[in-house]
Length: 395
Picture 1 (cartoon, rainbow, N blue to C red):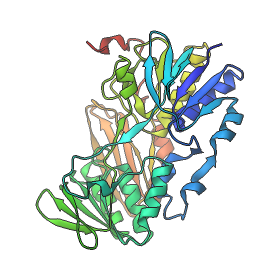
Picture 2 (picture 1 turned 135 degrees about the vertical axis):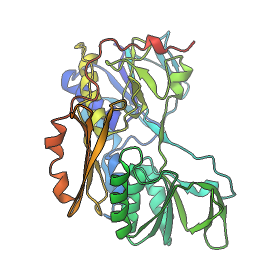
Picture 3 (picture 1 turned 120 degrees about the vertical axis):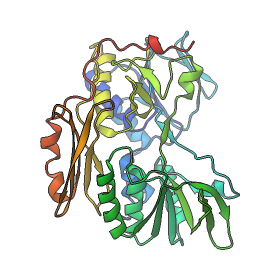
């Protein structure tokens, strides 16, 4: 019997495997990964340093224990070099593996900015547990860090490092932190609280060069000003790892295009997690991933189940300013209604008809309303039977 093969052992791959095993305890299951296959909480990477957590301490279960728990074969440190969609096979380190169904849970890679300078190779990114191990080692003896990007991960790392005594400067071309998720007033409130925690911001700016200097790194900004730092950490975003899918001729745009069953343009290949684009959305958040895994497990077990997204509040791990954001769906005609509170800030995104479509809460008092508000928001993506991947097939 040909197995179900899952490419990827991150949160997406392992969550799907667990959900699938609840339904199909004995069907052959194989997971493939190019790393060590250890299970850990990736969201903890951006706030683990202040807690004194090493990379090994983040590990929750090694691959061999996961294999026993899942009754699965887990091949670690392997390279999947090709998908043959006609033969339903994969080429893995020169060996051909056949599959009944294939799931791509490949995740995403950090975006690398096109920087100039002789120290570009010193710019680090943290996208997995092994990256985090290298990052912690590189921090030894350092005092100052420049962070590229004031998005979710950038702000979380900034708070974490500043709380541990590092001099932190965040550089972003946006006018305020979390520019894609917050209105100006909310971004300003978050910035103020992080600045009170010791974080400095250089907003409306971008890094052009990273060069070596006598004792540190020299960063030249687009306005020709210069910052000195012992370390540079890039957190400017992620790009789906869709190269395998593209080479196999699957429909790929921003991510691997799927329908609402998470089926790609090949009837036996599915995708989920950070690598997926569904109805134009790429949603690299935990709650959508969990919804995808539950629905896809049912579909793969013979119970076709479309995935839909309820409102998903995102907790921003910035203790200096406890924050929960539920961003409005794109294309909703409305406006932010903002209110400054004694210990924080509250914003509600309401349509012209007064319906709530999103919110942002800052401060211990405000975040208590996150579940109450989330219940008032319609699903981000309801069941849409018309979705089709064939409309997005390569020419």
